[in-house]
Amino acid sequence: MIKESALVYSTAIGEEVEIRDFAIIYENAVLENNVKVGEHSVIGRMPTPTSAVVRDLKMTNTITLIKKGVSICANVIVYGNVSIGENSLIGDNSSIMSDVRIGNEVLISRNVTINSSVEIGDNTRIMDNSHITGRVTIGKRVFISVGVTMANDNLFGRNGFSGEVQGAVIEDNVSIGVGSVIMPKVRIGNGSIVSAGSVVKDDVPEGVIVAGNPAKIVTRVPKYMKR
Image 1: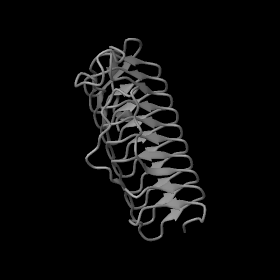
Image 2: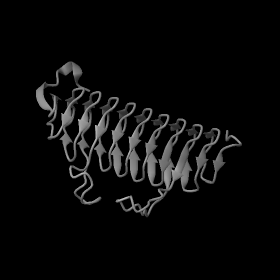
Image 3: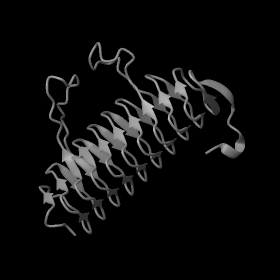
Image 4: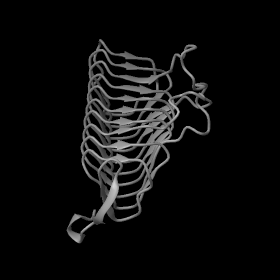
């Protein structure tokens, strides 16, 4: 079902696709079977940089691939060169910039912003109002709670968008609590837990709980809390 008010420029639309009122599907978008696109959402939008943008946004591949069974809610913007894996859900008012790869059965909740060059593994959950900065790698079965923010540049853009700009690497099975801040270039090891309100400035080894500002190891993750 494609509503009359939707603007669909793509010819790569699968079977049993639902595109609701006032959605825009650009010609570089590929929607596989059983995809749902909510009201006022935009799929395959190309960035429109100005001199204020420090990152080179020239892309060699502009295809945005929405795999089968994906549900995209209302007022979502998905830019060019994005891949969203099977049976994932993108919540209301979220924004996904270019060069992002999202795995299968991922939940991106409401008002989440994902910047460029991000990878998110299968079965990961990112809750409301969280910000995933550019050049972040997130593993499988990760849980990121509400209001989590990430940074990728300790120099606040002084040297532009260079190879020095790097976000965190978050390994599989990590849990990050409400309102935590993840600083540039840190690695959070497999199965570790970041307690609510923590500021992670240094690497976190596998299987520990950290808390505080700066975050310090509190204890090992008990067996009953392991994911």
